[in-house]
Image: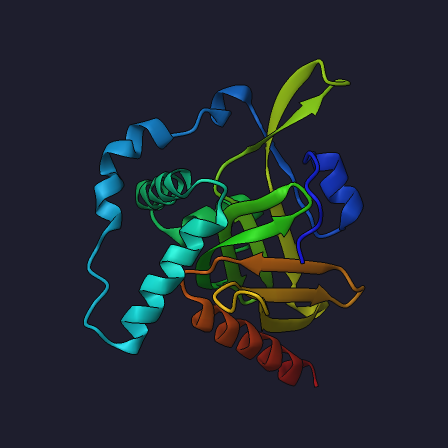
Length: 220
C-alpha cells in the first residue's frame, strides 16, 4: 500500500500535492531534543486503566504506533520528546496555531499522534482537526539535500486540507495484518493522504467523519 521509498525533499512534497506545506528551519533548530529526554523513557509505561476493551485497544494501538517506525526505541523516544514539547509550549492548541498560523476564530477540536505515509517512509507527527481544516505536522524537521547535494537543510513536513476541500475520510485495515489500520483522506481534487499508527484510531475515525458530515450539513 505504501510507495517505494525515495529521498524526501520539500520540492518533491509540494510538487506531489498542493496541500503539502514544508516549513524550513534554521540548522540550529534541527538539533533534536531526543538526547535530553531519553532518561524519561520509563514514563512511557503509564497505567492504561483497567482490563477493559478500551484499555486493551489503547495498549495494542500504542504498540502498533511504535512498531510503525523503523525503530521502536526511536519511536518511543520521539513520542516522549513530543510530549515534552507539548508541555513546554502550553498544549497542542498553541503548537497548532503556531505551526499553521491559525486565526483566532479557528478552534482546535482534536489532535492525534500518528504517522503520515510518504514515498520516503512513514513520518511521525500529529494530525490536527480544527473547525476549519485537517492538518498534519511532523514531530521534528526532516533532512534533505539542497544546492545540488552540497548541503543538508531541514524542514517540517506539513499538510493542511481545508474542510471545504475534503472529499472523504475512510477507514481501512491491512488484509495481511488487521492490526495495521489506516485513515485515507481524499481532497476534492483527488489528492490522497494515508495516515497510520494511531494511538486512538477509533476516536480519530469517528471525529474525522463527524466533522466532514457536519461541515457538509452546514453547507447544504
